[in-house]
Length: 430
Ligand code: ADP
Image (cartoon, rainbow, N blue to C red; front, top):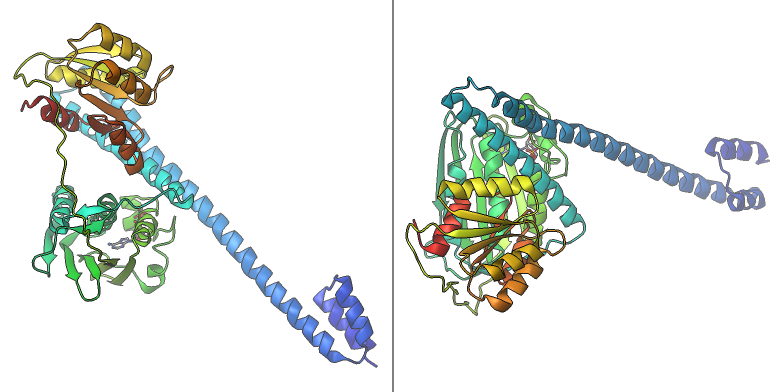
């Protein structure tokens, strides 16, 4: 008789499925059903366990990420609020003031980079990031990345940073999304700088015509990553929790964004690392040449060049603080400013004042946005330079603004240097 063991088995499996019960009842002596059912149940239980484990892991990761995010935002906010308060102290000397302002500026930049990483991650998720291929001069691109990152190496770190080029005569018409490539390399170099106290960092590159690959690597003599963690570092929100990474901060998003960008370009990333010796992150990106080789178009304005003239600039900006900042920056070079609080007023002022030399146009404004205002202004004034300044800062937004015909584009937060650079390019002053 099989009834007793059958009952025992079904109980132990906690089977509630009526169909399975019927099969079991029908089977009597046919143990094969019991065996199948047992196997099936076991499989389901394992799958459930794995799913539960994954859900718990993702929950823990989310909590750790939120705690980390909160910390990453609070730290610069604390510095901004604290040092802004201190700046009110009338007895402060110029040296302290400069130091406090420097901290506020750096903290603000830090916050912006957190926001940018979060936005980028959500864009990657919703597949809104599309590569924008153009002809690239790889030598020039690597050199630019090198110089922009070199200046960020803290002076107290004794790091020798160099470029290693192993291919002669790299052609200048490689098809590539330059912005993405620069972001990828900057992320890797920023990490190399972050996790290296002394020694060297190299950015190397080679073009392999036979394999049709561009190889780029970033090598450092830093902290290194152990075998267990190396598998996790490309996962989002993953950070290796050690004293060094706590001290240096970060959201654990940098490498997952980097990997997503590389995959977007059809490439792969690999890492080799030894604790205490250093790490090498290597990329392989498909090599494709641009056979059309577009001719570079230099944008010129008809605006007459005047040196040392006190020019009038219209600032179309609805936000008081952003207006004040731009006004103060322009006053440093003695520009005369007029304000419009929305696009419609900007159009009206522009119509009534043909003497306005240039317009700074915010894009998101009430009543009439910057795009509409710009188009209306162009119907009666085709030559006045109009510079879009906006908090929309992705490469796609930039493309949209430049396609609309704006003379230049500046993304917020506005930097004094960038504003003066654009004004110099427009007016020809130095
Ligand atoms: P985060 O912005 O938090 O640094 P990343 O995704 O850029 O996040 O990096 C994830 C983790 O990988 C870091 O917390 C760090 O522990 C490790 N890591 C990344 N690059 C390096 C490197 N060059 N040397 C040592 N560890 C690194």
